Length: 117
Image 1 (cartoon, one colour):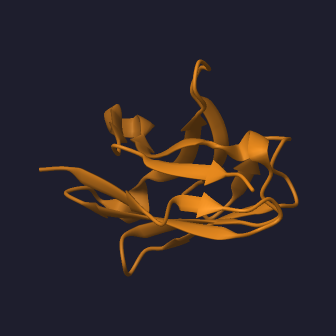
Image 2 (image 1 turned 180 degrees about the vertical axis):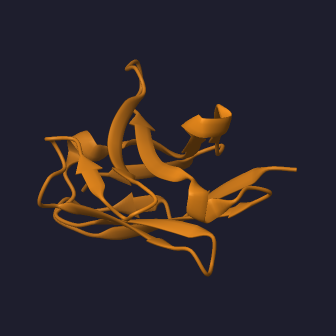
């Protein structure tokens, strides 16, 4: 059974930091491109960052220089370090595991990040 479990969300003041974690099971983690996506109220889900099997990263322009995605293959976990948070970063953040060669695409249930004073 495939599971992606996000953690680390919460309420933070503007300018603050949070680190999200996504721990996986049931997949060959090291063979998956891992990603973080977010969905704000009334908005479509959007890409935040991805990290592929060689640890090459890709970021949305809105988070470049503030967010860092990383992975630990030994722990089957992907992280998102979020610094200098802004109110517009408020959203539910979802973890994604994708392996195009076998057409697999899995999602976590999300963790809420609220940036507010």
